[in-house]
Length: 92
View 1 (cartoon, rainbow, N blue to C red):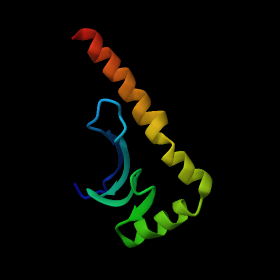
View 2 (tube, rainbow, N blue to C red):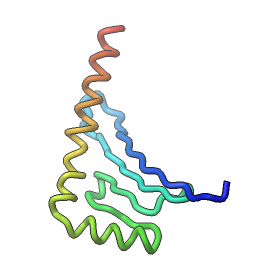
View 3 (cartoon, one colour):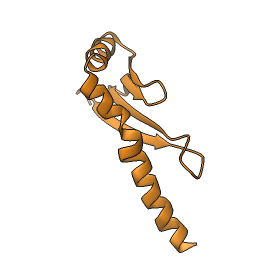
């Protein structure tokens, strides 16, 4: 009850059947507040606290790290969405 709470979650959001509007969001959370976020629509990290701004700057200054996050729209989101859609379509 008196400890610290840290989590990181990512999600993929889309509304079109062809996934053309797919968005990848990667959140870093401390004590239930998002302190840094990558949003594929923005294309870089955004910090919401002093610590988050510091880390966003570090992450955004690393072209390999940033490119890896940008690639998650296709590698993670679209790939898994296609698998889920195929599994669902086979059942209907």
